[in-house]
Image (cartoon, rainbow over all chains, first blue to last red; front, side, top):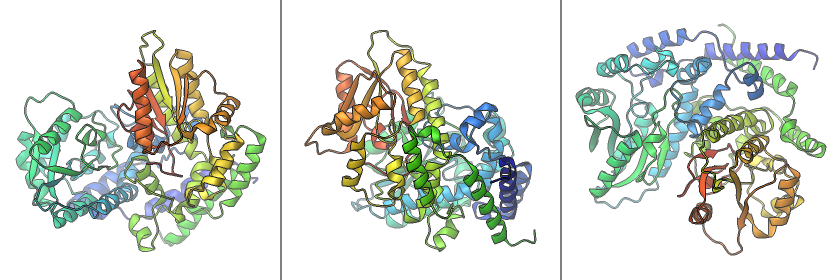
Length: 278
Length: 278
């Protein structure tokens, strides 16, 4: 091949940019026209395509990060305790979340969960439950994060809580599919969230607005709880088990949702390259 | 945009093919010229580029699998107990393994492990150990799998064992970097492998040939052991702990390498889209 490698890379980037620009936004992720408009505004904020997919060596030599490898490291729980998305990965994470990739990866997770649910032999005593996390598992805060750097900026409790109080977070459609399936076969959903007790009313309203109903419990964090997310969530699962419930499944976007005994008979990790809760 | 989307996709494929064809093979993964020749032969066996990166919906409608989403599902332990790589993903897995992607993803894992190792405060009693799996963690069987469909074909014990007995498996260079780091700071390596006791001599020879030395233990599966990989490996780790050792780290390519108490103070999952051991 006589053409310089940079030219090939340029051609690749141009081709990828064309494909990206012609792909429809994942409107099915969004519940309302208003939501669509917000997301389009957010998408417009992602300037140049920066896939950063060179070799790690090349990237390291120019002080960069292989963003897709970093995100895989997050999903496989190799990269832990990080505070913010690497600044150079804002474009990567933005494209991942707003394009089809996030949805597609979530579909595989839920396909596995549904296939597992179909193998369950229920005891018929109504004691089987499935634990759902809420943020980035049941409801998506993508409209917020798309306007706040996709996790590249430090968490801002004030602006995030203001967003939560709108009660406008869209459902993750894949999780809603799993939820409906479980309700239809008689497994009871339990929401277990790091949201606090004072956010109960808006959370209930948001969930109902997004088509969720029939849950057995909505467990929110009580005022004054000081432990880790793992301690809080595994403690609540232990109480469920002590009360005679069988946790047949557990799904979340954070490893802290699904680690810590009792984890549940089977756990599922949805993708989340935007933030880490330890 | 007036150009049809298929043209954009074609342009993308052409650009990607050019980049792939001009990229050097990861020769640093390979120890010898002979190994290089084998890998080039294997690379030539990967015919058309089949990235299969459309939306899950599109892929499902034509009976396909989103191969990158499936591989992510494997790495995040959502996809479990699979027997073979989906046939339609042979091209994807082949390109992943032989191109720069596998190496780059492995670099991120080892970068995290090295950073963690640098935080360790050693007691000075020589009791800290780090557990290494062997196959696809310390030694690579890619030369074998490249000639056997990259995991799309059922496991063939006869031909695989013949390959192991050659003792020619190359080191994974990233793992060797971690190994050297640990030895240099005084953490003792322990190999814990599903290889059987009768393969001890060839395994030792292969490890030495690939630059590994100074390990504390090489633990192989004893004849007659019938339990699961998790039971075997967690049992051996328990024995180490009972003998007074502190397992400060544990790295493997399978979730069964790193699940089951005692797991080790910190665990690391290297990528492996070619096979699953439960």
